[in-house]
Image (tube, rainbow, N blue to C red; front, side, top):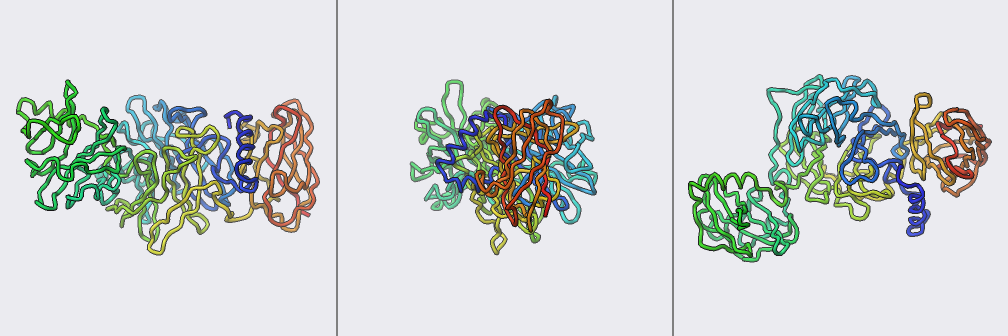
Length: 591
């Protein structure tokens, strides 16, 4: 990774002192350590799981992203870096923001849907096509597939069993289109569908909302306004409700420390109980030029009160908004933003559609911020949706304030991909992709997934060391980076003394006798072949002679002993100083 390698190694030493060496050896998450990756989108094609990720630039203080990367695995524990699969340069009409996308295969072609900032259209969704899952991908439209400005992000694609394809996206709203069979256009008759973000479908965002008011028979959380009072640094929640005693519509107010609660009812009764029988109350706080706060409500008729500084009482009674002031009031109401940014339910962004046993699962990052992961289910790919539960809580230590789900079946198991901020220098804008196994309950609901460093503990298949293995096939690494060149393709570079690569679940069967490594030497050095730990059994040492050019590839070899059966293999690099050599591939020869 481009962060300071000396700092990284110091971090690993410190980590090893805090947790046991054994625990460090078992670390599998994040699954990529050479760069910061985000917004994972897994896709299974034939015998391989391909993973498409965003790429957070080092030291970012915003979502600074310029390209997307591809990784591949056949065993779920070793990941082969397939390089940059797509970048902003592939879209002539794009300017910035290579954010979360997804790839899908149809009829032998691969379609990668991504959001980017267009030169003249704001956030837009483009599509690039390739005949290979790893590219090269080409923008076949030379224009956006869909444009809409801010919030048109996080496209997710799904093909149903009947062949109909859907593209979902959106923050804070949720949209979808029905893609045509060509996958690069959509049904114009149906058009862009805006999914209703109802309480039943996605759950009210306010914590414990329905238990806030003891006097309320029910509340309508979609008709509410959460606003911060700068005077006391508290949040005030004004919400339409039905009084259980009078059976009449009223407006309640509650106070809390966060925009999404939980809130406390400080009055023990409704704040407003007059002129509240309109079709839609929609209580809203607006501010005039004198910084006076007004509570307004109503639909056919518009009413207002002048709030006192405590924001839970009002002065001079309830009045209809005068005709000559109505436009000013309605304009202010239209331009008002909740403290929850108009997000009334938990849906935030990043939709992901998945199907199992005729039931459709819609996963999404849920709010507020920091995000957790939740899901809803429905009888079709377009719902209607019913909120189910949280599947991953907010990640505490080592987390990022965003998250992004990708759920996929592979080799008889189901896996949830997500991201955190656990690598050195990591955080909200420097994230890293992780994976854990997902489990279903007998009734089809998803169990809670607890993120952890261990990740996937058991491979779904063993790695064959007697065939060429790319050096960039990695379960865990320390210190190295990845590069590419026309002749060698993708290879491992920036190898210093003490760096290593870990490869998991390598099956040597009856034994190996020779190790080969394709390298381009610089200072030279050696590769120690160790088993099960970085300082485990030394089975052989492959000497690398010094060279003059980092592009002169040659194969070095060494005899190995005491390697039979199943092991994790550590290729530990040794040398004097500086970058020792570049590393392209390796293989063993059997007895």
